[in-house]
Length: 357
Image 1 (spheres, rainbow, N blue to C red):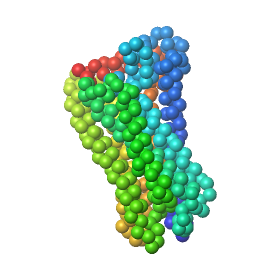
Image 2 (cartoon, helix red, strand yellow):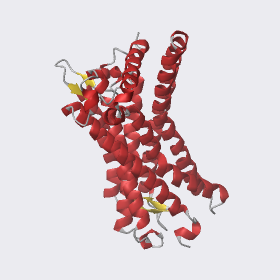
Image 3 (cartoon, rainbow, N blue to C red):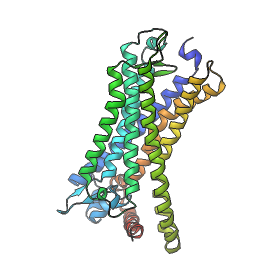
Image 4 (cartoon, rainbow, N blue to C red):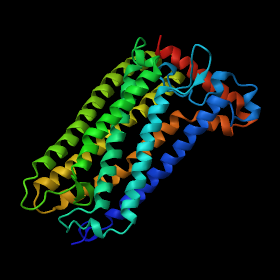
């Protein structure tokens, strides 16, 4: 039976969710580069605001803790720069953006090589399988770096809050070596092909032991699992820290409490969405491997996995846009709401002081 007969409307569900992710990721990428222009060249800022708003106000990344690297900071020479967290967000969204494009191309082009009938996997499916796993693991790595940065924001003495270049390099090295070892080498070993409903690690071939294939599949699952566990640990510790801070802040200033509460909740989206999507994927793979015949449970989780995997980037993009919202304030604010914008940024400045007192 064809893939469409086995899983009716699954491809359509994936196409819609992947298209939504591509749209929101593209919006975030454009927003980031507008922010870059604002910070580096002081352009794309509405004239009626640029002359009256302070340097802190016109910065497009004033939306979270300055010392955590998520906002525009100034170095010793008073040169503005985009924070480390903003860079991590960009790389995360780029992973989702190109991953969504690959998924959409895979679904839209001729799919005769996706039937899984051939023993020798076609080159197209091998490449799609490689890119599927590459951008998948890439998004996991950058989410981990972002969660790590958020966790380190609880410690004022942490080096990551002041040494952006070093930790940006560390992030790149972690991403590169993780993807090369667990995704690149399997491509060289030709371990990719058709797998149930998409191209990823290929199915076990008939009359072959395929121990090497099992090792690479297990290795990929383990590295993703380790990242998920670490994200959960950081999420727990960070939530515990900010819960105490918020409890203190609630008694001092309820308005500021509400602002900080939103910041923390939005930032928690990254590890939480990662863990949820991995749960759907892990359960669907487990059911496929353990059940000889596809029952209703395995089909449900295959649909859940197909949707959540492709919509994953859209949730992260929406969370990132919240932190970049200063771009829209600067570009689209009118003279009538100047004071409102000023008040918002002043409150955010106070928020930093309260959180780090």
